Length: 510
Ligand code: HEM
Image (cartoon, rainbow, N blue to C red; front, side, top):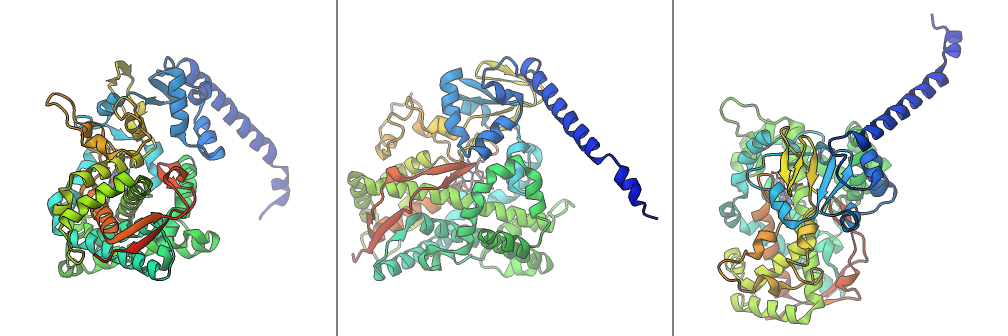
């Protein structure tokens, strides 16, 4: 029988206090070890950063600041290598980028950064290289340049739908929120390309598509979930409707999750759907298992699909937005781009091919400059040094250390890119003598090495068709906002937090 008197005599407070004290003592002992005896003890950096992970939690979660802003300050104080965690180093010299992210380094991803992106495994979140390579080899053929050229009509179709919605704005005499427009364009392009079904976001009035809005709303939670993974895992335990009721701004995201889960379920139950589809999707590749291997689980397939959406939507739309805002701020660049587009696209009712547009040198320079200033991922993409250790920037780095360098340290380096904060496409056109290094070597928005972007060709195609369609088909003017007012927060990728980016877009007649 239940004995309540036994419970009342159980010293619950004493046990709790002892547990807290033991935890605190363990933290202090570990902190002291980290300061004085850890293999990274000789590397400079803020004292509390090496003591415990709470230095980063305080900066990113409690103060809500960008780690990369702090990194620029720290490197100015401490030099080229800074210890920014008990087990983490950040480097500042651009050439170190190619020491860490290069084809020969098969280093694992750092789970403490990447675990946040999915509950099961997807290409981005498989930490070890050999298993990631297997998954990448399966998906790669779908994302080759040849495949993108073959399926360019899918992206052009989304560009048409975005332009129709912009025309609607013009008829209603309202300006277009260009960030939202590009997000919808990228989202629809990726979902239609990867899964064979579009989310129809480009058709949403004012480009306010629930899925796009939900993705935008969910991103600022990333720094918190990164440090407190159990919260992310417990979100998965609740049905979608519960999460949507408690957090209504996440309802679009839950819808997307459900839609992809149902699609995956349907596809697995009826694989003949794949044969009937108009074009191959990631599911054709993932479910086509050879050599007696096992296909990924349902949840695994859903997470792979979700990650495609997250990896490709914001990265492409941020580059398009940053480029567009800067071009409209600079009449000389705007004029030059329009003149070039007019040459290959003289008749407005034609649609030049992706290959023809991709051959335009000035458009290419505009895209590279947009990628440079948007930079793909902002947070240092940490990798784990193999057990035997490695030489980086002339230092011996012990095995199992997390190392990284943010893309921003390459793209904003004034020696490589003079006046780095200025949008200057011409810098990509200046001829170089045969011996000098091409500037392309320093364009790292898609990262480098074996874990670099799978969707590079698709992303590039979205930029080419996005810029070409918007600038050729519309006369554009900034509506009471300019490029210097843009504001971005680091949530692994840049997340927009500034004023609405409104553009008056009038359809051209010829
Ligand atoms: C302008 C557009 C894009 C940029 C700048 C970009 C940038 C990047 C970067 C920097 C990484 C490395 C991330 C890391 O190591 O932490 C990455 C990886 C990845 N990206 Fe992209 N991306 C773009 C578009 C896309 C698109 C359209 C897709 C697919 C739909 C995509 C899918 C992926 C995937 C699956 C990975 C993981 C690759 C691996 O682990 O091997 N990306 N991307």
